[in-house]
Image: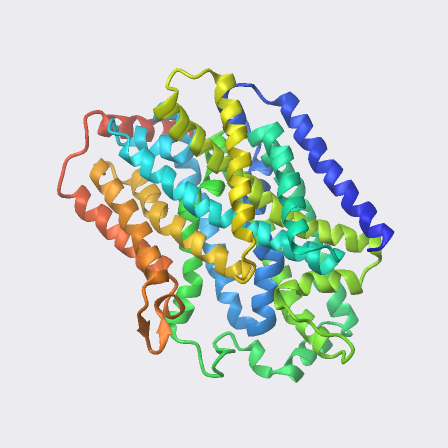
Length: 504
């Protein structure tokens, strides 16, 4: 590995750890400070930390890889995600910020569900926490896999060493600085990703002789790559079910704890429109850059007989190393690490928050001090990271597959529940629990049942978030209309609506 690359990566690691130390000194030692940053995030940090934790390694590896193989037909995922993110800012962000504060100052999503529905049995909290721990451990594992692939492909290190280095640095700054460290590092990492996703496709297009020549180079490989309705696997047209399945990724936003926790932590509801404008601009430019990297990178590599690419998901890594000076190449590799680590850190923190608040404090140590709870949160970070590393030793699953399963699980289990809880006044605890269970179980059955439709597994025929989201929503609607909410639920909803109107 070139000296310049080592210097760039070394500086990146030092900056991340430095931010963690700075955040440690700025963070209150209470639980709200460690897990929610005292609800003091500014709009820019909220937007870029939400975006960076959302996009993860799949933005620089999974999405370019899909574009490399399938062409513009992979763009339906990007369209769905963009629409979903916008809807999340419009429908969820301002309401969740106010309601979590009105609902007894809830600091985790399970905490909010319990307070929102006056659930004295704590069943909602427990099941939501189990969903978070299970799916986030899988999700975190996908990020660690991406880190292992990066270190193996770029640095000549073993895949296993890459797992430990990636997880180790993330654990270090998450452990020390908590939510504020995660959000501040995500902001910096989001900036690095943004610059990188402009630089790489622009340079590739220039190497191909400009945009017109780059388009011609892609067409020379296969004109169908510019057809958004073409199925690269079969050579036929994409079905409406396939297009809808890809766009349905956008439904997942409403239920992603590591994203919507940013809405809970933003400084004020009045900051949400600014955060939305920053976040959506960042996202649109970054997605276009990722798609362009995969498409034009494929044309560049195919046009050179002396180079080949074994794994399409490493196209960004490969281009960053052959087209740039080692110093810049190191910066671009840092962008991939930034994408990976920003998501892992957010997921680790949300999972540890759930383990600490929703299990340890709720059932084991109800009178635990803030200092004890923060310590428990840090221990939880380490435990979840170790399990994720263990799961990441199975390197056969693609990053996009791992992410899609976890994304669907959260989207179906929590998405309808979050939306209905913010808009439906008479929603009941039974409806909340039923919707969450049906959504999660549907996704798992859809993935693992040995059934086929048109010769395809259920998951390949239709993305599992679609049946999960629909059945969860129907369950919530039916059960809410067949019972009455618990005492105080409607009054709290009315207080939330009043405060939201005052703050908008």
